[in-house]
Image (cartoon, rainbow, N blue to C red; front, top):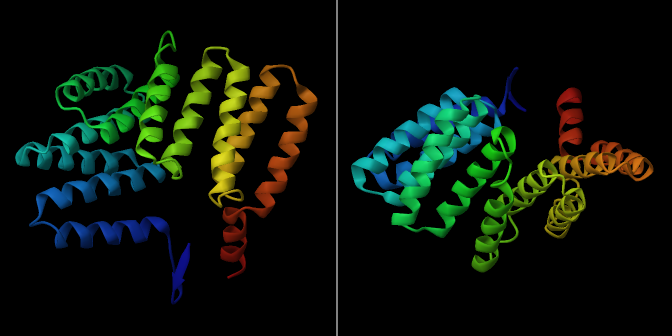
Length: 244
């Protein structure tokens, strides 16, 4: 949160204003606007606003259809899958992911495939009856990212976290622990060791230790989680906002 004058400005305010400016400025370039809409939709997902996210994705979908942009069209559909999942609309999400995967087979795109695999795995982890598609989906996504050399961003970390969740769903807790370790290693070596994302991953790691009955190790890890929260960027930002 920031402040101009006496009125605090939230991240939501900044995003809403940016959206209005960007949509107006790039209205004459549908290809670029489609990409912008997809990126904006991801930021609204971070805020948990599925309504505006859904509206942005629908517009990106329409623009991609109008311009024949298959890559962005498939990406929009896979992001819609994730939005439907967040709203608990699992049957609709399942039908859409099946359709998007069919489109991908006809028009391969490795980066878009990673997006779709992530949406598939998240849906499977949350609502899949057998929980048997998440692990192969994330293994494939990580293979693609490794082959592209794109191994330092938060998307890459998210793939490890989703894979660990899928492994936990299948009862493969030891493999899940190793996967959480990989996610934390990426965060540490990319300078994100004191972020809330690192804290969340370590918390999930500790929960898996509890699932294995390793109470002492889990308790030690959770104590470290609390220590990291006290040092995290989000905690410091909260204190600055409180005292600012």
